[in-house]
Length: 57
Image 1 (cartoon, rainbow, N blue to C red):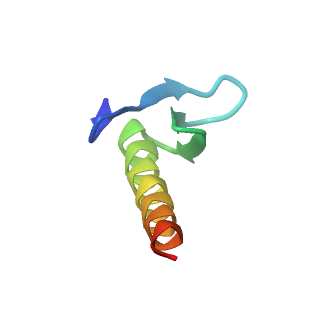
Image 2 (cartoon, rainbow, N blue to C red; image 1 turned 135 degrees about the vertical axis):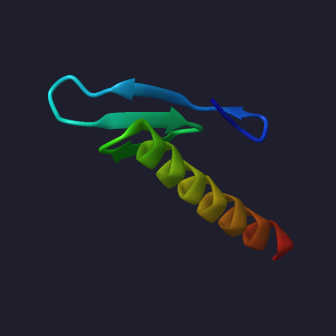
């Protein structure tokens, strides 16, 4: 899956129930693949906003 130009890898967690998503040094977890993906979108948006504000200073 992709978010913009970034590739997101989603996989089942072996020692827990659910799925995890990894992208750009972020790790998110969810009960479903879709939930892990949506959480990753939010995490990347927060990082993008933080980096944009930091560069403006």
